[in-house]
Length: 333
Image (tube, rainbow, N blue to C red):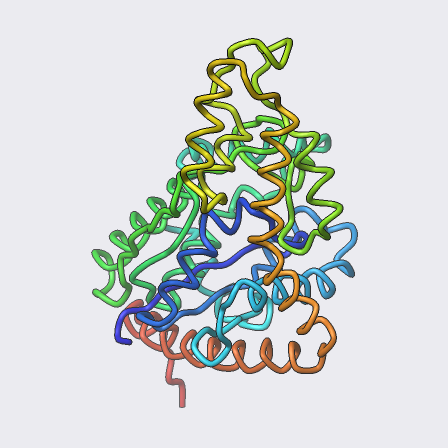
């Protein structure tokens, strides 16, 4: 348990299947091998909720429920609330001197998320500085590994650059992190978009009811070139089959559906019905565990507070080293 993982999510609402494929699945698997910290990044979520920060408390609770529901063990994993570790803000400020504005402007993840949000009054400074904040999150915990989705790779590379510059300028205090991609690079949205995104409304959530899952699956985009069920269809790039590949454990059934789809001997309805059956079976135990923890809010709050306490202790230790390396650990008498 010498190696450490830091990962996390902005609490902008419940988590979805894209989060599971992109990161949660790896977190559950690796929690037995690594000292794991999961950051609930509420400060970064303020870039979307600065006009309604009162939403964050409930969102933090919902995200914690999703963590517990997918199998993160609070005996092994520390859930840490970002705003309750003030040392993160301090390190972010120090890192701001190590990054140029031009570098932030070139970051493809930031550019894509700005495009998605369509900020009408200009981009908040807090949003521009998100890569710096994330670098502070990762490095203050001295994380060796960061499980992320493909879209977050530029953020990890930014963190690595900051670590190299800090260690070169001051002292070799910080750990240069590595990214770990999920089982697949990116799960498409139900609308066939490049990724599943809450802001685009093309998600299947981990806590969705059976009926909600059915509705979302039956409305999924398929092959736009296929007009009739008897027309030969395309499997590659078809979101329904992408989901079958990931979530349907009956690989023989999937291959049969693909073959029939290419020949035009199976309709979209049947393919979607079988996908719903696979997804509902996958989500049923997650849904059940989520409901069990939701009925015990005091226990969930205790898990969050205990994880945050342990996380802050690590952050305080790192910041002692950072200030000493920078020669700003003042000892005025």
